[in-house]
Length: 215
Image (cartoon, rainbow, N blue to C red; front, side):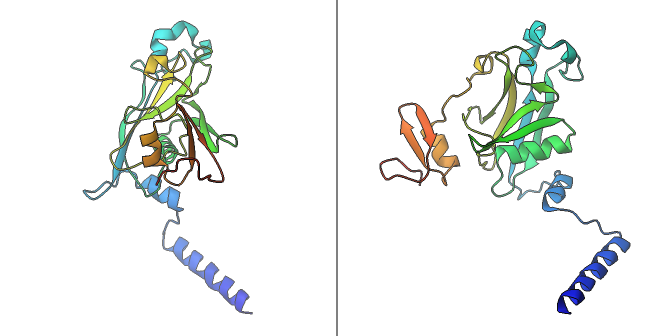
């Protein structure tokens, strides 16, 4: 009886909200529609998306993509965009929110092997769209972290750049698979445990005392 009464109350409340014109939104939808609500107290980051390396490798680009619809004349898919930073936001969170707001088509998939989201395509440009060494990379404050974008936790003032490489990262100042610096990992990923072997970094679980931990 109590459950039935509770259900009736909930239904009546929802009907009242609809009748009053109130729009019910999820947390993600709320932040998406209020993406421009930046105040003096807001923590913010900036994000941009570029594919200008393709302009120098036009002959390698898939013929179906040779249009300014996919590759703008200046190579800028998303000019620098300032967005509010929520607690715990990752590079992927900001990327997802801003591209949705800007109506930029993306294709992303969660990879079990790396426990992170992999950005397969942006604006219909994919890995191998412009040669066998091409694909998307991201950097924060000029540094390529070398791990998944949904594992990089941001801080106030960070600058995110998504760049398209046609030469395995060498044409944008980095290379695929480049290991993050110890300092960067310790600052950004305090909850993970890492094993450091020379210039290689591996996420390990469970923690082992012999391996250095970020604290």
